Amino acid sequence: MLSKQIIAVARSRAQYTAVSLSKGWKLADSHIRRAQFHSKTVKVPQMAESISEGTLRSWSKQVGDTVEVDEEVATIETDKIDVSVNAPTAGKIVELLAKEEDTVSVGQDLFVIQPGEGGASTAPEEQKTDPEEPKDQQLEKTTPEPRAPSTAGKPSGGIPAEAPKESKKEVKKQDSSPKQDKSKAPPPAPKVAGNRGETRVKMNRMRLRIAERLKESQNAAASLTTFNEIDMSSLIEMRKKYKDEVLKEHDVKLGFMSAFARACTLALKEIPAANASIEGDEIVYHDFVDLSVAVATPKGLVTPVVRNVEDMGFVEIEKEIAALGTKARDGKLSLEDMAGGTFTISNGGVFGSLYGTPIINLPQSAVLGMHAIKDKPVVVNGQIVIRPIM
Image 1 (tube, helix red, strand yellow):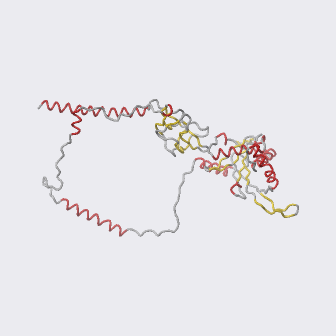
Image 2 (image 1 turned 45 degrees about the vertical axis):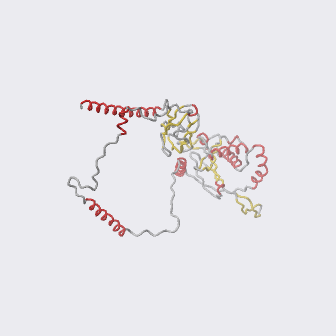
Image 3 (image 1 turned 90 degrees about the horizontal axis):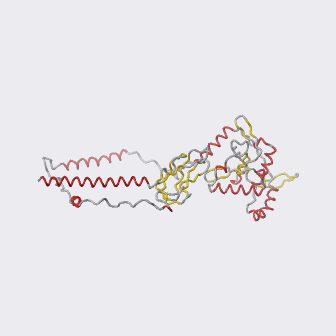
């Protein structure tokens, strides 16, 4: 009898030891996974001096994906531009530490990468089976435990066998209550003809910042708008004459923006106050013209800057405007492309606008709004003629 008790105690201890070892292996495996064999945590990069946070717009890679050096992993949207976060080394993405639409700050942990050639994993294979257990323990696992005899529906220990009948009555009472609630329910609201749906879209950071700056300009600037009509006949003839030659020799289209940019440069030289800005209680006059050109993009209105326009000709201005416009539409503008600017041109004519009051881009002092060209009757040398008027 004593020997059987000793054997039983030994078996129970062996079983406990095997279970403990199994749990220990699993715990160690989880720690190994977290270590990820010299894995590297990538942080939110420095974006600019004036930008300390942004919105995690999207993940280009997910956990388990392999990446090469400098391959894009995530995109962070800021007030001005979208910043790409690239992999510092080739390897495999192990963990993502932020979700899309989260606000992330500069220096914050963003994701974990496990270095390796071509993303090859160096982690050992997972142990699919637990450590071998003693045969006695395996026999104990396969031996089913004796089941307690079922007492459902059988009177035992003085329990009456009519208990189920009471439950049936309670079910009937519960079934009758919903009918009473239905009778007291209010009549349905009358149907309204037509679609009444709504869609809510969260504003991106760039659009929010644009709205803030425009409202700030309205509150701070004592703006005055004047309207002038221009006969575009001569400029249209000039463009018609040279556009094919310019396209063939310089691979750029000759538009009206270069002519207006050049005209603004000459006017700003004559009126330096329009090219100046206010800083505190001082007026800063600029000896150069950095022209901000408004470009509409899906994310909002941006104003990349053409530097030193006073030293450029028509073709050079058109090339620079075309390059900045392409970068803006592709979302590849850098902070340097939009920093500064002493004067702005906004072309509302591309939307068919006849008149408008563009808002000054602070800290600038003035803005020129271009609008649609329409044929209108005008008086020339005492005669009424039709001319293209902007």
